[in-house]
Image (cartoon, rainbow, N blue to C red; front, side):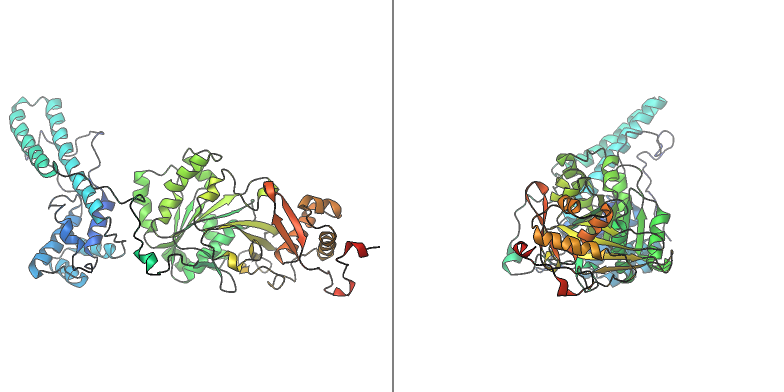
Length: 535
C-alpha cells in the first residue's frame, strides 16, 4: 500500500544543509489540488467525435513529476502507461483494474472520488498549465530555500556543490518552460457558438425546484434567485421546504449560513419532516466566519460538486463580512460575482435569503440595499409577505410574490404578481410542522382555524369598487379597524383575485376592482359597481 503524502523536496541529498521544511513564509504554495483533480477528471472523459481524447493533448503540456500529490502523479502515469500499451484511451474498468493489480489503495480511492468530479474538457488545458506552472514555482522555491539555508548557516563548503545543482535545475526549467505561456481560460468575451441555437435546441429550461402543490416549480437550475421578506415572514422556512423536497428525492443541498447557527437550521429541517439519515446524506452546512479567499474556495468547492441547491442565508451579513457597501451598485455587482454567481457557475441553483427595504411601497420590488441586487438575478426574485403570523401553536400564512422572473416560466403560473401562498401549521405540535406551498386564490385550502377578517374584507372590497385606483394607505384610512388587520384584509383580497394591486410610477401601488367579495359568500347583497346608483 502506498502513502498519499507530499513528495520529498530535496535538491541536495545531504542534510544538513538542505531542509525541506525550512521556515520561509514567502515560499509559494506547493501545488493546486483542484487543478490537478480537474486534469485527472478530464482523463475519464470519452473521446470526442473525431476520436481525439483530451489526455493525449494534455501529455504535451505535462510531464512526470509535475503533480505535487503522489497519488495524482500515479494516476497520471498509470493512465498513460495503459494508453501506450493498448493504443487506445483506457476505460474506467481497465484503469481501476490496473490500480488494484498494483495494490494502490490510495489510487483506487482517488479514482473513485474523480468519478463524481465535474470533467470540463474545454478547461482541461488551462488547468494543466496551472499544474505545470505550480511545478515551476516549486523548482524556484526549492532553489531559493536551499540558497537561503546555505547563506544562513554559513556553509561555505557547500556553495559550489549546491550552486551547480541549482543552476542545472534552473536551466532545465528555463529550457522546458521558456517557450510556453500559461493559456488563459475561455471568457465570456469569446464568440458564442450559435449552432445550438440554430439547431433549435432549447436553451431556456423551465424551473425544476420548490414545487407548488399543483406541480408548478419556482427555482431554476444553475441560476441565482432571491427570497426576500421582513423578519419572521417565513422566507427561511419557505427555502427549507425546497431543501426538504430535494433531499426526499435523494438530491444534495448546501446551506451557506451567515446569519443563524447549525442547531436551529437542522431543527427546522427535522420539524418539517426530514430524517436524520436524509440530513446526513444530502445536507451540507457551512458557517463562514471570514471572507472568501482562495483557501476558502478550495474548502468549499467539494460542497458544490453534487449540490442541486445552495442556500445563502444572510446576504446583508455576507456583504458586510466581505467589506461591501449594501447601497453601492458597484459593490453589489462585485459581491454577485464573488459568491452567488461563482457558486451558480458550478451548476447548482442559488437562493439568497435577504431582507426587504423598509419603505412599504417598495417592498413588492426591492430587497434591502442597492437596486443592482435585483439586476444581478438571472433566475427569479420573490418577496414573502406575512399575512398571518408564524409561531408555536399557530397556523401561519404568507403570500409569495414574483418581483422578477428573467426566464419567464414562473409568471405564466402567477395571478398578477402572486405566485403562491405558504402555510406553516404548528397547531398540532410545536416540534412537527406541516408546510404547504399552494396556488394563490380562495381555493388554496387555508380556511378553517386560520383567522380571516371577512367583514373587513367585504368593506375594503366595496371601497375599491367605488374608488378605483386608491393607494393602500388611502384604503386603510377609509375603513375602520386595527392597522394590522386592515393590511391582512387587503393582502388576502389581492392574493385571492378580488382586487388588483397595480404598480404605478415612482413605486406607488394602486388598487382596482376585479370581482366583489362577500363575507357570507352570498352575492344577493352585492353593492352596486356604479357609484351613481348609491343613495
